[in-house]
Figure 1 (cartoon, helix red, strand yellow):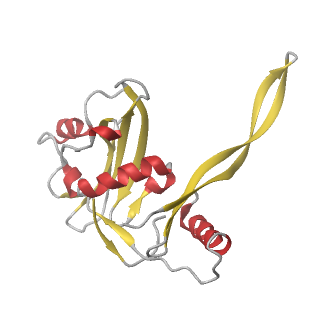
Figure 2 (tube, helix red, strand yellow):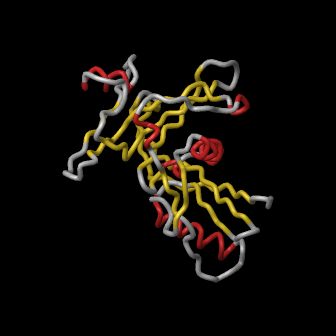
Length: 220
């Protein structure tokens, strides 16, 4: 196996103005947050993977700068593959197998976008609300008067998953990583920290949500 190079970068966010008290008076203070990103490079096949917010155009520009200044090449970059997702297994409750070492506390399906398979158009989006105790699938069963699952005649075309990691100390719930997957080729994991993304991409394959790669351009 080849060694993957990782370069961490910090991108400036939009300026923000906050109010704070100074000598008893409200005073505006401007600050510009640094957004963390990463560039992953595989010397074996020349693949450059950008983990950063901003969409595909922004990531393409960062890849070009990386190639020009760090790899010192002016050769044009080519997109290599699109990932293909299959959300069929999310039509009903399912187990999400994880490794103990990754310290994942629990995983929850927070949103499903359902589209009818009859081709007549229309779309139904179901999502959980803050403080909801019943699962999304239980509420679907309540509303549809049937099985605790997405109704027959509908496909899942987009889903939102929330992965809750354990706290740094102990086993209580800690930070959560929430992302969306849409058929056929969209996933928002690229906008998350590289450490979380690398862990969860492993599971997308294991959970049979990432099923194939096809020729195309990077995810938006």
